[in-house]
Length: 212
Ligand code: B16
Ligand code: MG
Image (cartoon, rainbow, N blue to C red; front, side, top):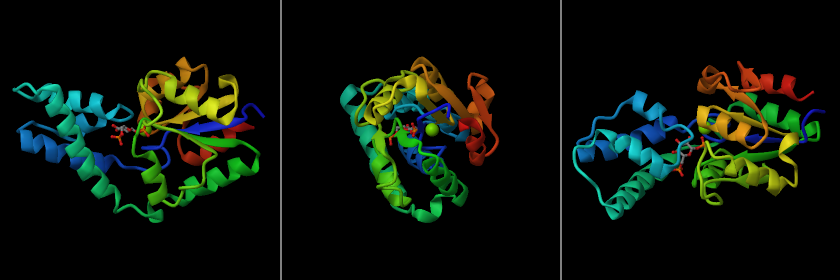
């Protein structure tokens, strides 16, 4: 087999939390009188929370101090987590679970490589709390995608060299991070358009064709 480990981005690959990010950022933007829409929300995919806030603030007329930015990000996150509490195992697509199980049966190690500090909470909500061999997320990195840190840490946690890992990503920044880590990358959804991936997936199940 070409790979020994698969590292999955979480938001946009294993499940979708886009609408919850949107509602939470929109509530903050409305409070501050900032224009915010779905197109701006799409720019936040794979980007860290504070970098996302800076993108939201591009349309802000005033200036926030660092303390005010921290408070704004915390407020957004509190609402986001309330919305995440609505998620359940029904938010995990059967195709995703079946494909993960098939990859595991092939003997591959499976890890998460997510920018999110809420990754473990989300995995618990969708019934995958104990599923992955290792989790590298926003709580163990100091540099966000497109920096390779989150994927290099995932490989290290799995005990694998980067060259035997395949990353699955839905964001351009994530594909760039995987390539910078020296890993092959499979793009799904929006990331296909960037043209930087080793494989372009039409459906999650297509991943099975990349690993044999
Ligand atoms: P949090 P991923 C990313 O997760 C999201 O795509 C991105 O929209 C979000 O800003 C980032 O996590 C940080 O999330 O505020 O929960 O720490 O796609 O890398 O799994
Ligand atoms: Mg993502």
